[in-house]
Length: 146
Image 1 (tube, rainbow, N blue to C red):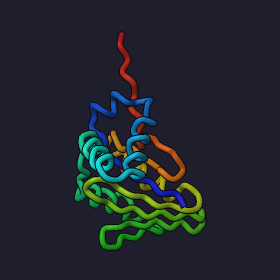
Image 2 (cartoon, one colour; image 1 turned 120 degrees about the vertical axis):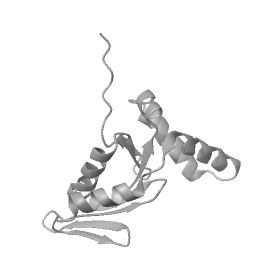
Image 3 (cartoon, one colour; image 1 turned 90 degrees about the vertical axis):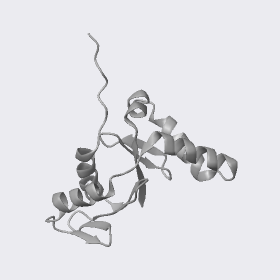
């Protein structure tokens, strides 16, 4: 099973750390594995670099974009996509601090969620702590200076 935590990163930090996403991964990993004062400090850092998720906006967007999709189900604020032909399942939950996605099988179901979210905000960072993976849902294009 793949488990992702999606955080909305403040634009200035997203632009500054583009290409150095491992730094974000290290912060979130350290926060998960620490306790006591270090946990308090890392939580403050995470709060500083992240934006709150507009929960209602995300709920409306998911319903609008995926509501008619075969295998899509909404249940008390959680969303599930089950694609039997592709053997792919994903479950998404929206919170003010982050969005969680759990997926099994092929990548089609989670990709459907990611496609909707990347159109909504440009600085969603997906982190899979268990498999040590991190990446932007919508990669930030580097500015070109002439």
